[in-house]
Length: 381
Ligand SMILES: NC(=O)c1ccc[n+]([C@@H]2O[C@H](COP(=O)([O-])OP(=O)(O)OC[C@H]3O[C@@H](n4cnc5c(N)ncnc54)[C@H](O)[C@@H]3O)[C@@H](O)[C@H]2O)c1
Image (cartoon, rainbow, N blue to C red):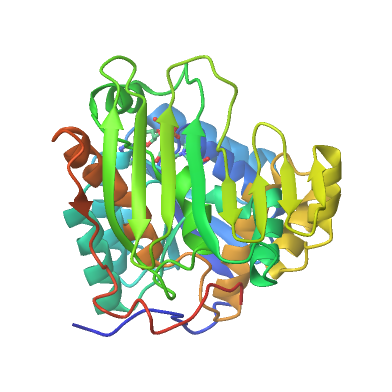
């Protein structure tokens, strides 16, 4: 046991040198996004697919950045993990390889940024925590939905007590997917639970201060026999509940639901932004977004606004990238730590276990090993 990584800091890194593994769809989007992020440089790229790799390097050079070293082949990811001039390994491969690559990177002294979900099983989640604690490295899961405009405002409202005691939240990934990679569609089709829980759960995890005063206790889960729509209900140790839904197969409008039910206020993000409070005020649509703006003061919110003013394609990705690099350059704790990555990702295996056993309750591990009350509340340093 090597000690908790709560509010963990490392020495400031003046310029963050990135080794990126997996240059498919998300990897290339990530490379494109980093044009806008100062203080970071992509120094090497790895993939098993030569064509993807060449396209990714062209993206770099077409945007006026220096070409990266490219490494192709089955062992390329290991080479990146060992490369001297890399500070952080950024993992954009398929789900099954995330935890293995992340652990290898940390074992080689690198920080990690890993796409969602960080791991696919509870034992992989435990391993991520064990290796991060042993090596004293950051393991940041790139859960971009934690930087959504309305959510960042809601977080500020919650901190100011606008919702009172938050008793129940709902989150989801409802997205009619048609042209994703075959490995991803197979995972959705054959998983049996919710293999992609973090877009829905991540923001709720920060809002409810999970492992910063409360902890996920147990869940029950059901999955449809056709179409693999999954509903998972989670209870926390403090007795709050979370409803999490996954549906990528029916033609519903995109939604992450993002509902907050508190003793003094209510918020929902989809389908129509809505806020209502016990003082009789309520806002919907444009009025709710305007009201949310009044609570847009955190450093993360300022990064979102900066992205908006620059006209970036997706402000929440921009805010996530900017915050990650800002915290690394300033030696600050990261917004999302290895315990978040484990707590949110483990729902994949646990929801399946419950769903396959007639919705039996399944306990959710305490990845902090008893330290979940040591700090009170999440904050953007
Ligand atoms: N946060 C988000 O909003 C968001 C959006 C899309 C995708 N993602 C995540 O990004 C990740 C990648 O998804 P994608 O759609 O880009 O998939 P993809 O199939 O388009 O790309 C994966 C790439 O990884 C490469 N690869 C696979 N195994 C490898 C290995 N061992 N070594 C090196 N390269 C390897 C593949 O050749 C491919 O180029 C997934 O985890 C996905 O969930 C996140």
